[in-house]
Length: 294
Image (cartoon, rainbow, N blue to C red; front, side, top):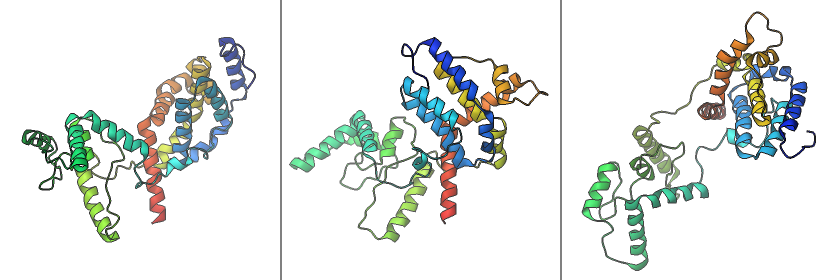
């Protein structure tokens, strides 16, 4: 990329965009027609995540590099394609959990009372009968042990539901490593069934992607379209649909390429690039990996 003038001068940006167009080659994207869920997840996430986390000046470099290597399917996001479905609670997750618990007055006071009791042996009841009743009304599945506090022994996900928060893909579970493997596995299956029955994931939420659907993304040139839109956004330039269509479909003359871009390519690209679709691709790729190893 040529040297910048006056930081992000509009004239310089337009000149750079023209250079991008000069070596933009839609033929570099041909092999996307044969991509599977793993490859589509990577190339879409590469674009979405890079442009979300880097500053403007860095994004300009990323746009050019992405367009130069549009079908790259290895890099810093590769490990995210097959994340372990069971793993230690991260420090960040624990910190977020603490923040959510602290924001709930009843949960915070119950935990503080338990801490005081364990440190000082204070015989003061942890919560009143009214507070227990109120909590149990909202957390019907609380696993309270006789003589203990139902609030601090209830599930963390119940606290999220109580606060009206949506369920995350990952939830917390406690595992007794002193127990035999067979007991842990059986108890985990019971816990998994109960958890998925009580929330939105009644079954393993893996969307099936057909070769026809994925092939259509390649045929409709959504990846080069996404890259052109990225370049236009970052360089502050707008191209009309007829010009975009001519770039994407240089050998098509029997259809209105502007209408094709507006009615087919643009909405299809927006759907593929959405967070929901990328998450579905990730889970589908992970499911395939698991099937291949069994």
